[in-house]
Amino acid sequence: MAFQTWRKSSHSASQSDCVEVGTGTDVVGVRDTKDRNGGTLVFQPQAWGSFLTAVKAERFG
View 1 (cartoon, rainbow, N blue to C red):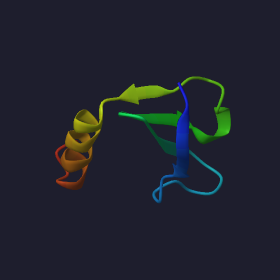
View 2 (view 1 turned 60 degrees about the vertical axis):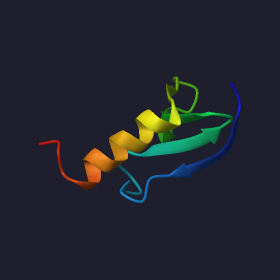
View 3 (view 1 turned 90 degrees about the horizontal axis):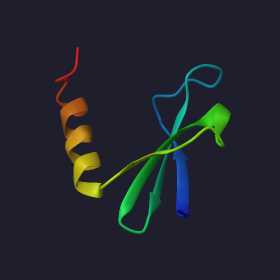
View 4 (view 1 turned 180 degrees about the vertical axis):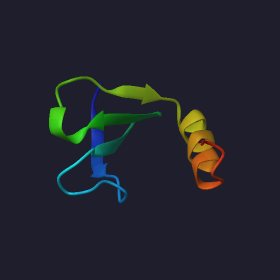
């Protein structure tokens, strides 16, 4: 599965926990910046959008 664009989270610190979000054809990927070959979580765009909405609304403790 190929992702066209990866971008680092704006909430990632420069020397600590970092994640990148990638966009592909009909999928969104999330991976660890420091271990890019360690695996990628893959989401459908609608599920990813719902997750972001919940995070922005502070629905997680």
